[in-house]
Length: 513
Image 1: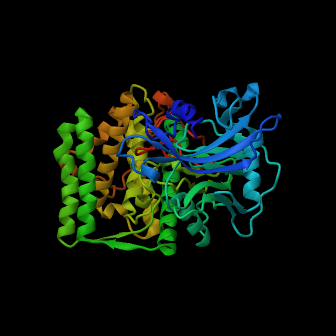
Image 2 (image 1 turned 60 degrees about the vertical axis):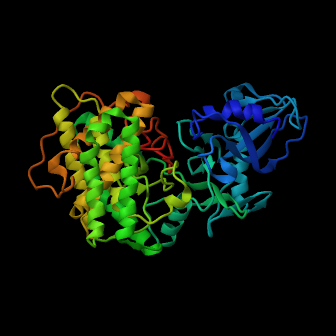
Image 3 (image 1 turned 45 degrees about the horizontal axis):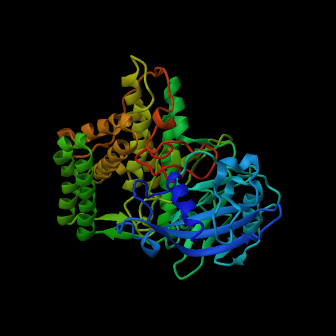
């Protein structure tokens, strides 16, 4: 580690998945080191070194060892080939790797292929344990290619058969992105790609490190499909309704497969208090939010008051970061799948594994429709149509959910308004910090949610009037940052890993991850 510290201190803060930007790294602590391929001196063959390290920063970042824990896959070569020049981390000035070149291993087809081989043959290697799902087999010789879009994790596609998500910032406990798809597989739910293999650190503080899943070739990203609909003025309500049904099927299967609970007065008060704290923190950072603080807080106060009056809500395991970019629609039959169950990567795993009302997922999707409409750069006479598009598709999504779940989320307006407001506040803070030009998008929702007429909830069941005639918008471009939803770059439409950026509302692909 002493010889690697100068290199990592310079390289790590520039990685998209590094969570501690803006705070200097004071040092590193080695959690574990495993040679997946020996890194002996000399020769043209590369070595592969797996590290778990904690980056020491401010006292507030208190994961393993007092800092955030990161997974690093380091390639070691005497001479780096020109095609891997972009993956360079540096050359240690001393220690056992003196004179060698250290680089990001996932860009090296040989080393990425070795990682797949470890998953093909389950077992223990050093500080790592590789597991393959029962009754599955993984063919050899699949050509790897890294997913180059910015993400909060790293992904490699093998042939057109599998995609491996490698978690970068890791925490103790089973990652929900493994736990929930495994539970859904056991329950027979086919709305989620089932894990084929995974690897983890099996120590006392077990950590999920990577997951291999089927690559859904030919599927289209829900976020891009929505933008395409807006671009040509096409109807999307049928797809939105089907997506609502898919979401309800996943929620029902999760409730059957995993423990559930009932939120009572104390839990509801704590839920509302957390929303209020996030609002206060965001308002302190974003002056544009301050005039709306009191009317927005009313949604959270109303939720707490209902809890004090004896109102209860069921809670269960949910997706945790649901938006259009976390969905894929198959080209063959139009069937929707939900992906990336990691939750918001910035939150501790223990928090992401808590039971919650399904309203949180639903509110995230409703915000995503709104984000798409406001991000499409409408022509001079089509702005109203884009907003009507969002309204119609929000309603269609809820209709589909109600059909499959047997309960209409709009019948809980206070809970829905609180969650949608909380999500919009998160979006405001995200955009203010990362994409100021996009701040008007969530601020439009803030203005709507703060109006007195929305005090009873913003998602009441719609009337059954005629749908407006579609008008084409002039452009559905990606907008600033290369994407049209909070979070920035897209991870691409064809893989069960939407872990792009931590996402607000419509999030990353705009999200997680």
